[in-house]
Length: 221
Image 1 (tube, rainbow, N blue to C red):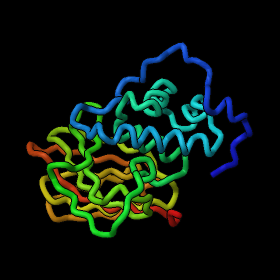
Image 2: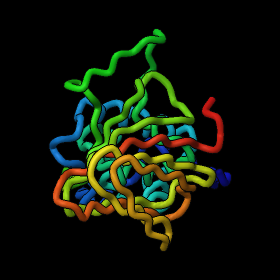
Image 3: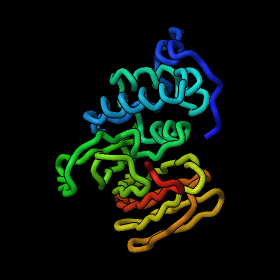
Image 4: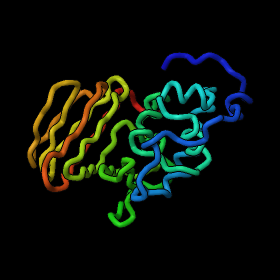
C-alpha cells in the first residue's frame, strides 16, 4: 500500500465537521442486514484508519465512500452495504474479513443458520452470508450469496491478486468479468481474478444461490 502523507494524530482522530452529514444514496444497508455487526465494523474501521494516520476526508477520497457514511460507521450509527465495505477494505489494503472480525477463542465453531451474520445491498435483493467465524482476519473467505430474480449486483475491482471461485447451487446467473460474460447454470463453477470490475446478473424468475471462496494474494498476519 502506498505510503500516506503524514498528518497529526489529532487530525486523524478529530476531523473537521462536515457540512453534509447525510450518507450518499445506496450506502446504508437494507434492514435485513445483521445490525449486530455494526459496532464491530465501526471499531475495526476506526482502528485501521488511525493506524494509517488517515483522516475521514482522506479515506473518503481513497475509497469513494462519503465522509458522512464513514463517520456514522465509526460511531456505530449506520450499517453499510456490502459494496461500501468492499470499497473501504480495498482502500485500506486489507481483506474484507478484517472489517467484520472480532477476536475469539477455540477452534470449533457451529454457525447456526438462524443466527447467521448477513450483509446486504441497499435494497436487500443481494445477501451475503459469511460461512466462517469472525474470530480473526484470514486470507481465504467462504460465503453464501443470494441474488433475487431480475437483479444485477455490480462489484468493483478487489485488491490485486484476489481470486474468486464461485459455484452456482440454484438458478441461473450471468457473471461478467470486465467485458466477458459467462452464463452459469446450477452446478456450474467459475474461477477468475477479481481485480477488475465484475457483476452477477440473475435474469431468471427464481432466486439464485451461489457459494463463493475468496482468496487474497497476501497472507494475513
